[in-house]
Image 1 (cartoon, rainbow, N blue to C red):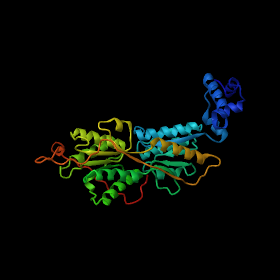
Image 2 (tube, rainbow, N blue to C red):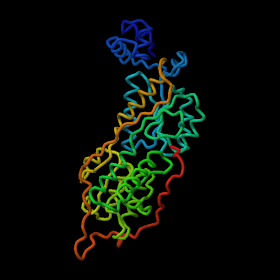
Image 3 (tube, rainbow, N blue to C red):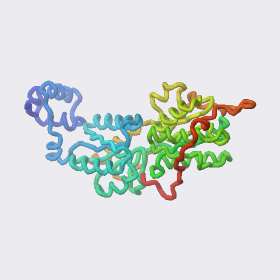
Length: 366
C-alpha cells in the first residue's frame, strides 16, 4: 500500500508539503497541489482521514442531514453543500432523515462516531430536542428553523413567497383558493400557510379552513389532499390551488389529471419550489422558486467560517429571496357556461374524509 512518502517522492516535494496538499489545499500553491494529486492518483494512495484527523485534532469532516433526498430541492441543497465543502478540502457525510425524528436522532448518533467538526441540518420536528445532546458542535440550520435562540440559520423568504403566490391567484380573479400545506410543526410550512392566510385577509377574502388540507410534504399525501379538495361540490370546489412544496405539487397535478381537470382552464396551480419537471410539464408550472443550490453553498460557507481559527461564533441569520416565476399553469377562473357547471369530479369521486389544518398555537419546532 503506497504511503504519503511515496506520493511526496513521485511529486518531488517534501512529505510535509504532500500532506498539506491533500489535507489543507488552501495552504499549498495550485500547481503544487495538482502535482501531488496526480501522484496520489497514479499510486492509488488513499489517506486515512479519521486517523489523520485524530493526530491533527481536526477531521475536516462535516455532517449533513436532509429530510428527503429524493426531493429535487433537498438533492440540490446537498449538491451545493458538497461543492462548497470540497473547495475547502472538507468531506461531507450525508444522511437522510425521511422527515422522521427517530431517523434524525440515529443519524446524529452515527455522526458522533465520525467526529465531525460541524453540522448542517434540515431539521425535523424533533431536532430542537436532539441537538441538546451535542451542545458544543457548531450547527447551521438550513431551510427550516428549530426556534433555538442561539441558532445560526440559512433560509429563504417563505412569507414573501407565500404572499406572492396567493396575491397572483387573487389578481387573476380567484376567490376560492385552496392550499395544500406541510406539517404545521415545521417552520417553512407554517410561514407559507400564514402568508396565504394573510394575503386572503388583505384582499378582503374569507379564510376557509375547509379549503386548506395537510399534504405532509409528500407526493401521495398531496395527491389525496388534492383529490379531496377537487371533489368538493362545484359551488365550493377551489378554482385554484397553492401547494406548499414540489413533491405535494406533483401529487396535486396527478389528482387534477385523474379527475380530467384541465390546467389552467379548469384549475390554476402554483407550486412552491422550482424543478426541471415543473419547467417541462404541460403546461409549464407557475412556481415560487428558491435558490436551493445557493442555500447549500451559503450554509457550508457560513459553517466553515465559524470553524476557522478567526471565525465569528456569534449566531447569524441569513435569508435569501424567493422569486415568483409565471408560466402557464395559472389563468383567470373559468366562467360557467349557461346551463352548465363545467367538469364535476365530485359526481365520480365523492370527497373522502381528510383532516383539516389546525393552525399552530405556538412557535414551530422546526
